[in-house]
Image (cartoon, rainbow, N blue to C red; front, top):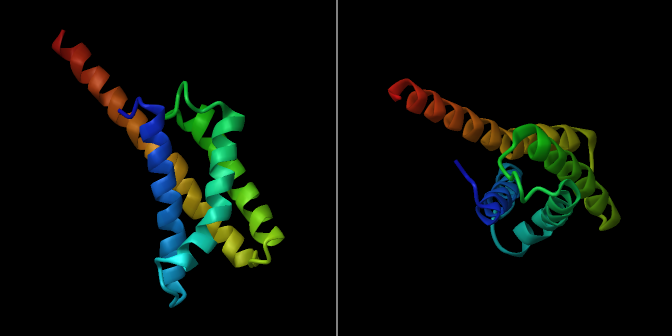
Length: 127
């Protein structure tokens, strides 16, 4: 189980960056370099705001308490920052970004919670 807030934040950063890299690659753009930074920064900035607004660090792996709030702020804030910086926010992109970031930012938290519950159940059964 991920207990360290720093580890959880780093995982979120990696997943948001992966989202941007995969998106760039799927559009025949270079998935790395300055283009990646240009694509990722609005979502990474919004991710940091999401962590601050949700006070994520006490329970960084909580799917509902932390994950849903971080996800919603990352998507909404990322889209607002993209629009403000002249980047595209077409409806299909918004839909794909919303679903992909839901899978990434909430998904790992759900998996971590299920693994932790299974470990507790196994430990309880051994006692």
